[in-house]
Length: 245
Ligand SMILES: [Zn+2]
Image 1 (cartoon, protein in one colour):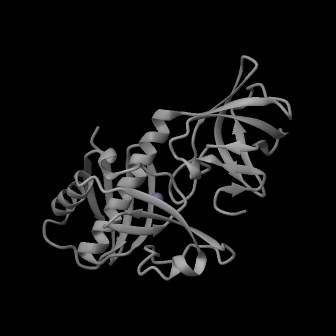
Image 2 (cartoon, helix red, strand yellow; image 1 turned 30 degrees about the vertical axis):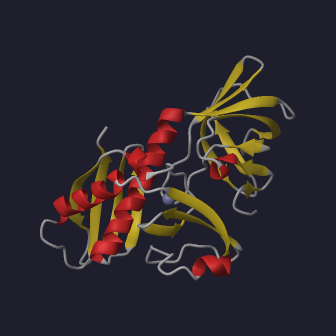
Image 3 (cartoon, protein in one colour; image 1 turned 30 degrees about the horizontal axis):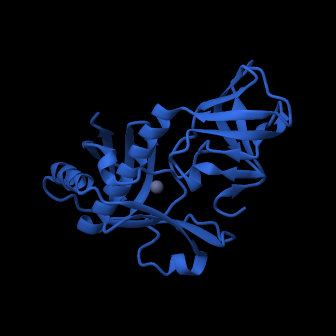
């Protein structure tokens, strides 16, 4: 597999998260499983980031892509009833820009949140989820400090405004796991068979093993609102955030 290859599909989204349109070839069309491309920038979902939406364009025809299915290959799920391209067709793939860009900002915002909570409050992540523009993240934080919500919002936005660069690199497994605190979730979610690990580094703040899409620097996230802090169990705190614009 490798980190930029899924079955027969080259993962353009991981190599360059700014790709929104690209030429590609249809390798398989299966009414049950979906469509396989040789090259795809559709983020297939994972790590809390939902799959992309978009289209395939071919000979004046449009196939809408509603999601993806991860198996031995990366299957794109067409909208039911849409025409399907034939195997071998040269098509243009296009990812819905507004949704993906918002997801990249939201996802990157969660990294900043997670980095700040670990650095300043010493808490690990126990879970999380995101939708375009809003997200929640759970932390193991038995004691909630005074003014936690307001302080957290201020600390997060200070790091956003610092415009820290977001660097992505791929390291051999042993080298990656030697980085202190690289696994920020309480459970180590990296499959044992994975020989290469993708690292996302918000330089000076947060380094994590991660397979998602992110902005190039933190100012692109925009202002983050901490909407709510809830208690979910004795030590579990759920932080809800929303991007301001
Ligand atoms: Zn990430």
